[in-house]
Picture 1: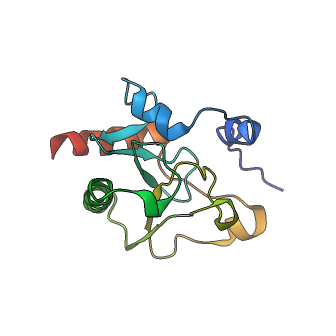
Picture 2: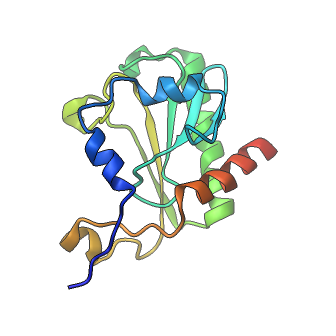
Picture 3: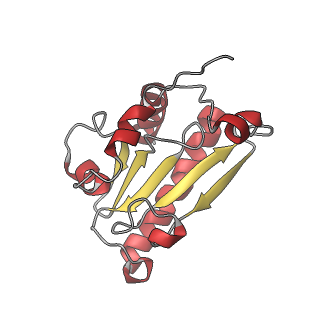
Length: 161
């Protein structure tokens, strides 16, 4: 039997139930974008890479304000979230040429929200044939680029536009 090592996931596994600080609030406050893999920040919204992605360039968009309920977002936040989703899609298309996207939000713990107290939105690029036997048989996802490579490409593009 062959082993496919994914040692970077150990940080995630060990952090389950231990994370006290909201990752979105932390990402909004830090000055160093690279440290928190933040791609973009406006007055209302932050855009970060998912550190434990479903696919290459899996991106998260969240309001800067710590808020868990979608229905309590104000119009400025809703507009800025959607502008940044659109911008993220354009950048991912340019850099990684996916065949499609999954967009969505998990609102509430029972809906799968890993961080239910700070609503956020997922942009997940998809490629024809990107799902194979690995997730089914070994609960393993193959990532073609490192988070650092993806961050650098996308960060530079966000700042270029």
